[in-house]
Image (cartoon, helix red, strand yellow):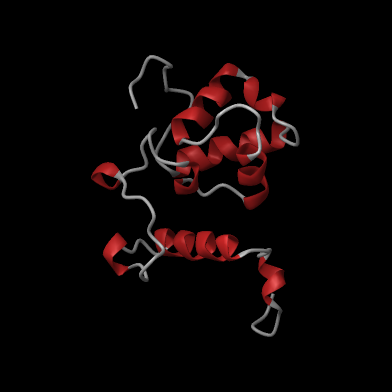
Length: 125
């Protein structure tokens, strides 16, 4: 990719995709929430950490994966919901999510500071 590439090279289809990209860039740059441009921060993390109560948007999920989870017939709206789906094995029941996507979701949890292998279903969010 070069600076002359069209925006579509970034995989952006909607304004929401652009907002998520900018939020992720801010997270990667380790900007505090007050340094984000106005209107991009939609959720504040308790103690600055992604928690199980956070919406899925707080995870750096690929757009395709986030869309699959959004349209899943069961409720999967929070980080905790996704973690429960992962641990129960039901994540593979989501149409379009296979073993590769599950591995990718595990990596996203680790990047967010949540070890899905150590989490117990009795933990409180």
